[in-house]
Image (cartoon, rainbow, N blue to C red):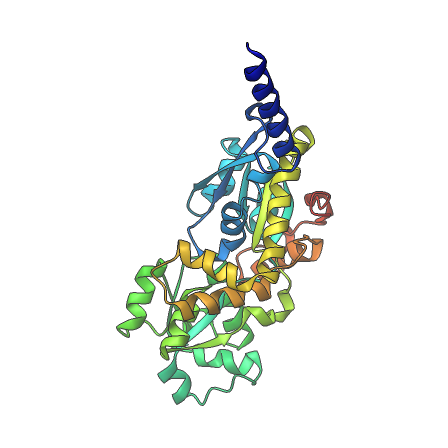
Length: 340
């Protein structure tokens, strides 16, 4: 090598070292760790995962996260089977798994409410002289004789609907419940085939901003308040995973921590990220959806025993869980060390 070439090589090496030190280049390939994250549905409700991915909160730490869309309870079952390391699930999912001897750990709560509003057709609320300031008991009486869609029988939307109906003094046959997926129930709602639905964003905002729907119960206010807070967007892993893979868990949770903080501090940028993934929705719908999610996203995303217990209590109230099957304690399901 000539003196000139040696000098250039030395300068390049020094420059590369400087860039790495300044954080302008990713860690060396051998330092990159890998993880898989299962998501139960492609929905704006999981906005923290979109932010963490798009803003490279995981990549900057040297964590390559592969995101898999595995419908419903299948995402948690994938964690239990060991085919993925993490999933975003719900509080009741982890407590029911524990009751069946399947040990999982709650690592971060990205949404701390049920994330499900009851929406009724505006013509029905107008005819019923709906008062949004009235008690939930009075508001719930408007459900009598109505047909509402939920994402699945026994799922969180159905649980919320049944609890509100019971609190309003209605019998199980007083409200007709039909299982539909969002595209189906939004179409059915638009042609007056159903009277309402129970859902999270952006479908609530679609109906409200179109002037066809009215929010009967508001999850951003914790309704039903007896069961607030809850852990709806729960990052979890197998109980034996993080003790053996502390670095991966630290990076994974840190990405959610940073995403929750970003959501609160950068509304406009968060709306832009949401719009990039859900371009079919109007700007006003996306903005209103993000505002709803900001109201339900704790920063930092800590999990509490009360959140998990409330998930069991609301299922008991809805008749989907026997009181004797409720867990005696919840603290041993939670590991907040990666959030702090």
